[in-house]
Image 1 (cartoon, helix red, strand yellow):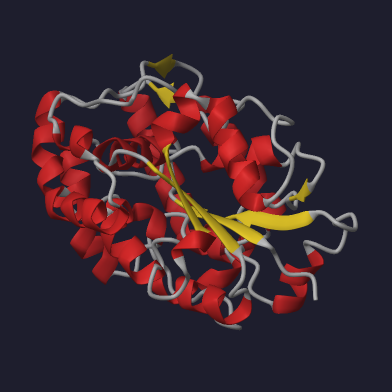
Image 2 (tube, one colour):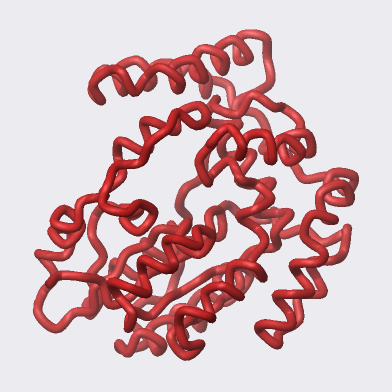
Length: 313
């Protein structure tokens, strides 16, 4: 069976794409070209439901057949450690249980980012893609309960994705702690060489072979104009009905629209002190829980003046 030896399980907008890009260069590791197969998010059936704008198209790209998933690792050279990176596995409790059933000995890597900054980056990503209709970050967070009730996919859960204490609490009931490596996003950014060596040592491969984290997953931010607002509306409508059309058709239409939306880029939306003050209460109790579970301090995340939006995701 060609199943992974390790998984990068979380979290979105915390450098997982950059970590994948670094690890894929290690000669003793094999990661497939598909970075987020999302296999453990479903149970032997394709995802169902309409969700939010663009969700169905994402569901259609998900690998849910076990044979297809194993085929991703067929080309792994003998002796290499196989892995993949799907940053929603930590958040999804059922995914955790499926991992425990199928790959109980896998090593798991989670990269945690200040939850307010992570949520803001998540919102800005969807806003830049033309899919997020809510131009106010705080209002978008407040809309989460309604969106979740309507079946919107995980990437729209700006608050829920950042409640790491709950997620790790559940994970540690399924996997021994020695199989889980918890990193901080700032360490990946500020100390890339040391952090990558920590990851390699955890995976049991040679250290010193990958020393930098390439910038990945950076979207330009379109300027706020009347024309761009109309383009966003068209892109959201396309995201709602696009699943009915073949993928090449969708790309042929969406590509020019995105190019037009991004023709004039403005500054990336900055997280303000007022926004941080409004959103931080969603996470205070969970940060305390995270500290109890890990034994580490995350007190810096509790400051309304804390901001890690200084570098690209």
